[in-house]
Length: 440
Ligand code: GDP
Ligand code: GDP
Image 1 (cartoon, rainbow, N blue to C red):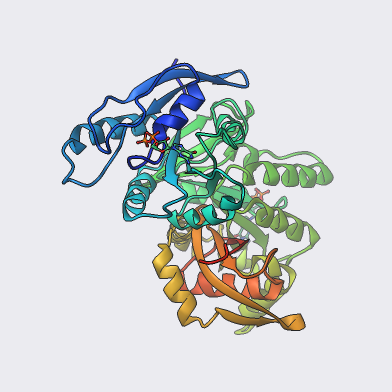
Image 2: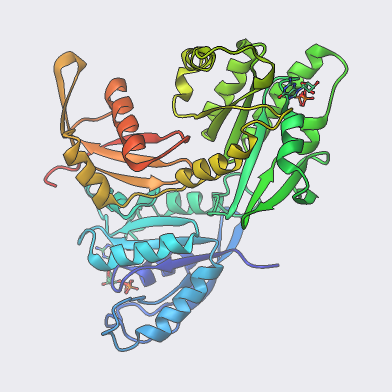
């Protein structure tokens, strides 16, 4: 069986060997080499809380080609990273973010493995706050530690082993596949729509390992993109009583929303929206997935010029929390506008994985004249800068002069402007607030 490997990368002298020694405890790495000096990557077995893994110190990976030995070390580091379960991206909290850190960050983002940014040399807790600046590198997990004084290293290891296979929180790596769940109450036309979408093009129907035995996904390749329709067996499942069918549809919706990137929340145009639809739409919001509201059976509705607008207003009023979700009026029976669904799914799935560089975000902040936003109760909030720390769904951290969460209206305003400006179409946006370290 393939070993779980934890790989330490970082520019020279940030303390990789020191951390390596700390973690494996017994093997001696070469500490105190001249920066950039040739050395083999060092591997050791390690254990934490009963979880075994190998730890790899990549040596001083440098992307600077004026270095004497970068190629070989670079290749080795790259090889190790490709196989890594988790990458520890070590940086030096005392020097702050350097250009080489930024370069390495770019490489690691492209590489797509789970990354923990580890801000080393935080020998005293007051440096922890300052280490927050490393969020700028664009990763979600940031740990201040002191490898030398063994501060916070245990907490870091706790988090690392949680990501190992076989435990619950496995981080999603960017996948070229788009997972789609079709959810809605009974009889809105989910299976009719699914059949139409799959059409003749479906290539594989596969039971997925690790899911319940009767869960069957359908895979479909279209214009070079793979769409995974989740639990299509369940969609076809019909139960005898109406009540049971309703309950089943809610349970299925919750379960399938956990696994998808994009949810098609199907509504029945003939019936309009009821509380059941609102409940299911609410789950889609909670799951943090991208949502397309699909109003089906549009063929069966008597229409005047204002019908669509009225419908839309009704939906928007009842599902304010899904304001980002596009609405599409279709007929699964006649096929009307169904061809628009695939491009729309692709568009929202792409927007969900979009990553905006910190520099662009901050020039947007300046243009949006948001640094001195006035919020109710006359409290002035000064937003210093912000950075995107994750995708799918997009997550941002805002640094300001205030502790605690941004005022609701300000947060909402910011989120909407970001969505509009950078095209985060159909996806929820998550925003966290951090206090800007003093003196920065
Ligand atoms: P590497 O080149 O990244 O492998 O870095 P080393 O592990 O060789 O460490 C470089 C220098 O940083 C050494 O002098 C270490 O003693 C020092 N160092 C490592 N960890 C810490 C730490 O937590 N705090 C402080 N103050 N110094 C550290
Ligand atoms: P599910 O329970 O959500 O999977 O719904 P079904 O796909 O089984 O559809 C329920 C009923 O609605 C069936 O009788 C379908 O023929 C009908 N239906 C589905 N889509 C449409 C549509 O676009 N227009 C009309 N008029 N009927 C539809």
